[in-house]
Length: 233
Image 1 (spheres, rainbow, N blue to C red):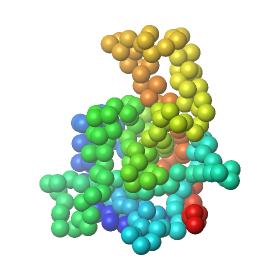
Image 2 (image 1 turned 90 degrees about the vertical axis):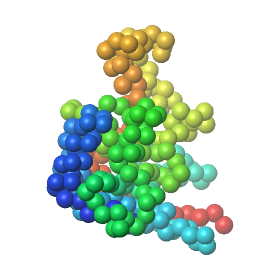
Image 3 (image 1 turned 90 degrees about the horizontal axis):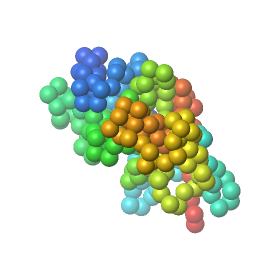
């Protein structure tokens, strides 16, 4: 796996500035060292092999995929795994050279978190989105937990988890019912969002839609595999 169209290189000082912005905007604590090292080595970019190879004439033949607890299957009953599309880039306007940017359409880390956390209120507390998955136009996300209890763990969010055409049976509903059971409630109507406890319940419900795919960023990367893509003739 390699990244293409990465943004200008980062330094330790720029990473520190990034962390200050993330803390101010979203209350995120410092980011894990292995993810910092990743950003220092390559400031995001499209994942290759994958969709970046697509043209009007040809389509990519390989993808970088990862395992999840979710169960998709093809018509031939073979399991389907989500693939990596792009890792978010870091852009610090006052400190970076725009002439070094190859592709301004890249998803940017701070803006992407603002979109998911503030605009659509998808992200639980201390859950930072770091990459796109599955398809460039989908809302699937790869995230890193900054919560003290599971600091650095990697999570996947399936963008269609609330869609009526659910491919995972009662997977998500069972997880939400466990939250209800933990807080001794029967429905959303019993949640008082104006209280601290109510906010805690809402946060746990959000987390039900995120499935763990790695204990650390480095472990996750090591578990990813390049596979051949089957094309329908």
